[in-house]
Length: 151
Image (cartoon, rainbow, N blue to C red; front, side):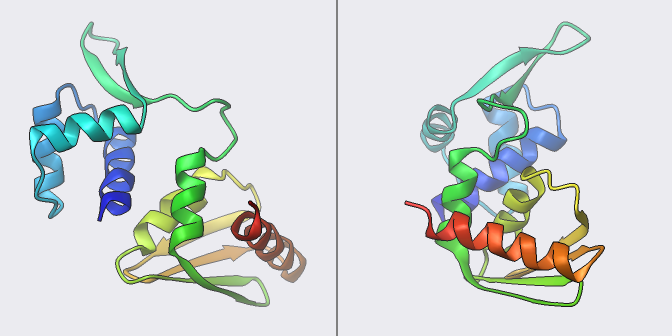
């Protein structure tokens, strides 16, 4: 539950202006997570979120990653913990996950910023990605396998 909640937090702050812990808690409740202020505070600390100034002199939560194109260690951990099976056919990649972790793995895939991926769709326990060629699918599966097997 913690991984799913923290992944949802990253998704929320990436797609919305979230100014306060109360705003974040409300958005999480809407998404089906029962959270307290203490839980939100702990998640913010663990995710190493910071507040950045917006154009209109307000502040919003943001995730600061060490490099712009690298997948954060948290998302790699989510990916490793949640993926059950990788497979592909021609230019289509199917990633099976633990129940309820499809969206979290989808966020991890999206944050890999792989230009070969034309698009991806995440469900409850499956992520579906499309690349242009069979070779790109094979290379991406190999990359994902290395991520899963890395120590």
